[in-house]
Length: 437
Image 1 (cartoon, one colour):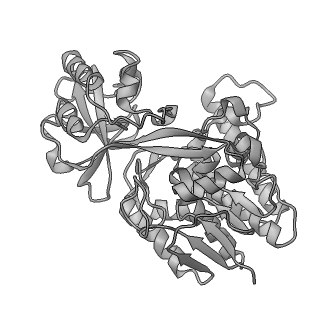
Image 2 (image 1 turned 90 degrees about the horizontal axis):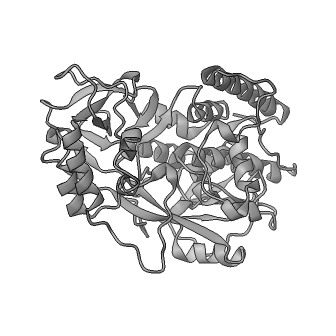
């Protein structure tokens, strides 16, 4: 039996390999780590999370929550292992990243039809194959992809937030609470007065940052904007973003603080915390200096500093079908962030789409686009049909869904309707196309 090559052991690659193997086909999953590392990865584990440990909202009235429910209906390996290795995060799904990646790796390693090949792929594989190498595709393979696609590609810079130890937090100042008054009290809050905020703000916008090479112009994705870049838009920008104090009451004063920095558990034990929204390109020494200005973090102990890395994605509207197959080559699919979907769950979901349609090709069936009424289908349709002139990475959101036939004024009711419609349509799609989950 012909083996399917899946290039890349990230979230999308693991989902694709898992689905194809579960359908009875042999898979060779290629992952170049640890033979060759990337600027952002630290381990040899599959599905390693290099930025936040959060998979975002679990609520069906949130597009990210709805996408996760769609993935559950499709038998997602990533969501299953995320839920098994979750840490408290209110209405969100966050994971212990080490246990999560270890669990995914173990599942893939134990699958009898998946062979993991620890080597770099430096050329376009012959079909049947799925390229899911992510935003940190190796230089050699991306050169091959660029040559295949006529050198049409884009890039932007992504930034990750620092992780600090719980022992370095001043618990005389810090207190537990929810995020924006939603969910349980799963976040540590560091309140700021206006004076404290302005001192921090001025240090932040004047701090030294890592400078990219001259030929690389930074183009940051809005959903992962470095905090210092966001701050330079104006003194109050952060107050409507990551430092928004809405719904937070400082127990010491009984009042809402002027600004608040929030920390989220990075592991189940609660010994590590992620600085929520503090993606940054500051130099490491500057992170230590500037973030020490935050009340409650006088002497923060960093286990990982924030960083930036180059994320690369192809011009999908020119090259991909809505089922993520290359227009010019039958049996060659792309999946993950390299397609222009943005985010953990979005990447994993695209791996399912590529996996489902690869199986259809192997069975001699025509590929099928997922319904536009679903988040997963709308995302893939977006990357395949967006205006190439303004193509940018896209996260899950209700704005990419077809509009409702009737107007519903309440946002909550409207989103509930979207969710009901999506689930109904997806269940019918799964049954009609005999998709096994």
